[in-house]
Length: 53
Image (cartoon, rainbow, N blue to C red; front, top):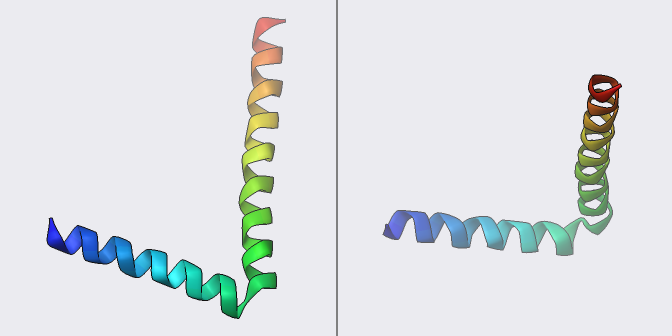
């Protein structure tokens, strides 16, 4: 259980460090994640629309 807590703190520290040292790249990464989520949601909507028609 201790290892999981330490790894969580290390991951959070890395994210904070990345945000402060490379904010433009961090913003691009977040935009990429949201673009992927929106593309997946759009594909699911198209799939269900074609199934229901």
